[in-house]
Amino acid sequence: MPKEGPRIQAVPGTPSVETETTLPEYLALRGEPVEFRALIRQISFAAKKVAAELRVAGLQGMLGGTGRTNVQGESVQRLDEYANAVFVNNLLRSPAISDLVSEEIPDEMHLARHHLGQYALLFDPIDGSSNLDVNLALGSIFSVRRANDVLADGHAQIAAGYVMYGPATVCVLAMPQHGVNLFTYEPSIGEFLYTRGPVHMPAEGAAYGVNEANAAGWSPRVRDYVAWLRGPAEHATRYSGALVGDFHRILIKGGVYLYPADVKNRRGKLRLLYEAAPLALIAGLAGGRAVSEDRDILDIRATEIHQRVPLILGSRTEVDRFLPPTSPGAAAQRP
Image (cartoon, rainbow, N blue to C red; front, side):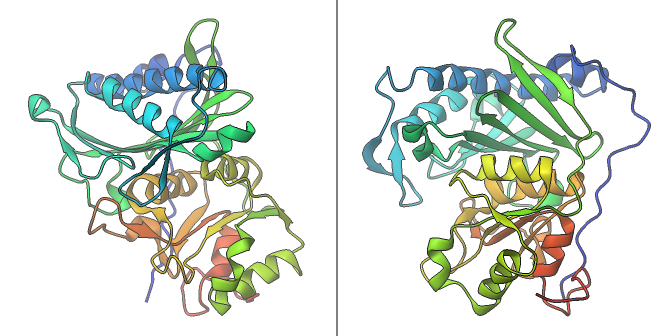
């Protein structure tokens, strides 16, 4: 029987942070190790380079596909290839890194020359890259683990986050000891500045995000749940095709996001280690929840680096309603 989702809380009593504080200063003030701070700085530097490229992507010929497919069998966009190279090249400079896992690389990269590195970084360099052609938001997702915990369950994550490239470039960083905090890129000084935190997701929301074009392939349970969201719950539909953008709305305003299994993707579509698990940690630390069918995402131990899972993610009230009645965390009234 699945157990109730973890009620993750940040350590209380941490001092307030001024909005002029940069991301590196924030981590230093919180007493984070030098190696970890250096790793986050390399991630943020890669994100800045990607953000700069996005501003001129249409002028630089970065739109459209390459004509190739990745290890997932998905079409590779020019931006996917560019962003992956930027992240990998920047992370190779960090002696804190021992292992890299990327959506765009078939196998885990063991960095022999950095064999003393204590961290593994798992990342999706660009989520929603097809949105670039129509000028919509997209993002990068990352998960930080110990070097020997790549396939461990989601509770093993030291930190997780994403960078959303939209009207503003925003970095959301989650750490169990500090909660979820938001930083906004200030291009005039070239730094991410602390904006707000710890962020608390509303317990319920008024919107849901799901690709309803796949509805014919859903299980009856998923169809009934979405019908409840659309009908009695009176939720509005908000779905952009970019996981980061859809989740960021839910983090700030509440609601629920779904990418369930269907007849074409019986194991789900989203990747556990560098999409579902990092967002599950963020949701949990902010007071929300993430499940896969009837168990918490954070409880799942991976068997392969590109493992896929169904994902139901968001405000605790909506996610609990999705669970089977026998689940301890399920709501008393079913849809």
